[in-house]
Amino acid sequence: MHHNGETRYVMEIDEILPVDIPSENTFRYETLDSSGVIGGGFAVLNNIPVTADGRSAFEARFMNRARKVEDEPGFVGIRVLRPLDDDTYVILTLWDAEENFTAWQESQAYSHAHRKRKTEEGIDVQQPSIFPRPSFVKTYVIEN
Image (cartoon, rainbow, N blue to C red; front, side, top):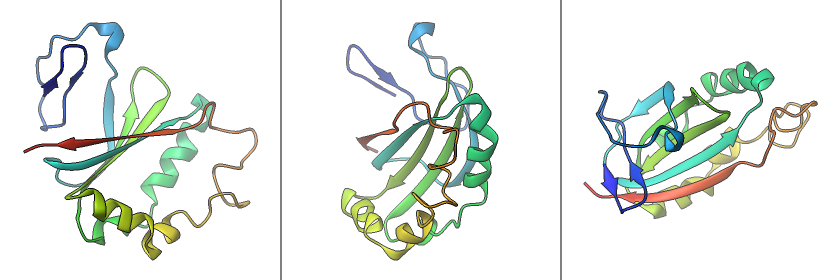
């Protein structure tokens, strides 16, 4: 857990932790898919809002993913997190260094994983859209 006076971050440890955070500032998730370990490193959190009607299609896409990211140099772990109280999924990937994440974004594995984006087969162009708002990415360095 990290506390900077205003924000508290709790990372997965495979157990429930008592944390004193006001409920209006709490976002709860369950793990939909996971691989690897979560510890220290360069964390990339892709926050993706999904409509209620789009949840099953979105989840199916992730459950049937190619899983090539797991073979990339510097990959540590991934968690696909389903929101319990709102509409924003979080796809967390952890890398041993930012450079490895950047290299993955430029790799054939990344191109393969995102090959349907902006095509008729892509979930991002289906109508009506299952994405009510743009996604956004946050990155963090987690110290051991």
